[in-house]
Length: 271
Image (cartoon, rainbow, N blue to C red; front, top):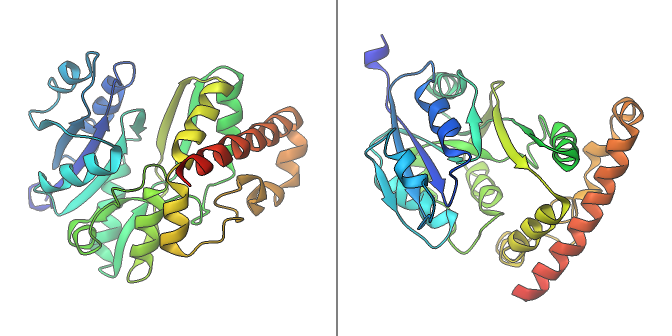
């Protein structure tokens, strides 16, 4: 019976997400699994994000300074047995929550679940980013978990608040040492919006400032497929896909190369 099922707390972090937040929250309340507690943790938005969020939930909070702190704060306000963390520019397919609950209810040694992502957006570079994302399906080295048993999340100490960008990888790495990480087939749709190459490079520069902390903490090599995406083997294991989309592939390599340069400067700023 649906009434006997556990509560899932879906925690959405926001900051000036007026163009996206309605679609995101609408996809959450439209889930086929209905025992959902929706929590929005805003970070001092200057637009209508809080006003829109308030139409969907009374569990609306304000917290900074970054996404990891917002997520940890949301978990402390939650009452669910399971936690799902998503960003405001994401939309859930209708079966996401149910699929995650089903797999965790059946297998008690699983600590968290990876939800595969697809990217969408407007413009050429959004298509390129979507093309890149399509290579990562079923690649657990790149896709991190978003759905957790609350007891596991708390045991791990939540997200590392010194990280912004690699915090998903970091938490998944820690969980994987003690628990299995499963994967479902339903998707998160990541809406990149009207995406420009400059915006991608700014984003990479910003997130790369946390990479040094991630590498040091997890004893990672500075030169790896995580830090240098152009080295990721998944890009070169599907020649048919490359041949079928030569322009997108060339543009993707260019984009990734420029992102490495932007990331390098972000890394240096932290150092």
